[in-house]
Image 1 (tube, helix red, strand yellow):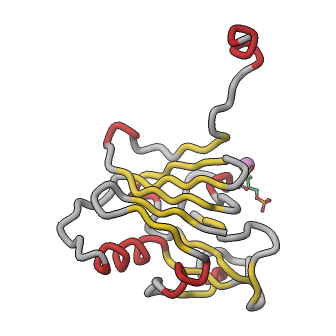
Image 2: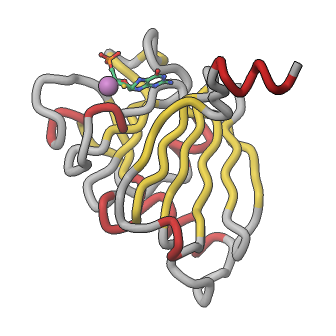
Length: 152
Ligand SMILES: Nc1nc2c(c(=O)[nH]1)N[C@H]1C(S)=C(S)[C@@H](COP(=O)(O)O)O[C@H]1N2
Ligand SMILES: [Mo]
């Protein structure tokens, strides 16, 4: 399973869980930020900064938002200010995740539990103030029954 990571100011790359973990500077027990949920995690923002550094992209502008997409096409977009505590769970009891594989986002200081996106396979660092200061989530390309009628 691959996880695609992109930032238009840096690059577009694919990672495995282990290569992502190897690139992380800050590993921590998830429980430190999400009481009651055990497992091993890495901090999102510090992952971004070490990734940026590895690509010698120190002058790239700081993102305004992070967007994640899961295997089931569930997505979430978070303003940069809401990801201060965000982290990815990647293992439990030393093994790959049974639920949420390959990695699961947790946003302890986010506006909703619904932002804890399971099975993340795409991670985008975005640069667009117009996306606003509210976190959003939901399924990609949801089409209402009414819209479907017109598409036939
Ligand atoms: N991939 C994926 N992640 C998801 C969802 C989803 O439908 N797909 N639902 C979200 C919502 S709305 C909630 S409330 C939580 C539920 O987490 P749980 O399965 O651990 O109870 O997962 C979030 N993460
Ligand atoms: Mo939810």
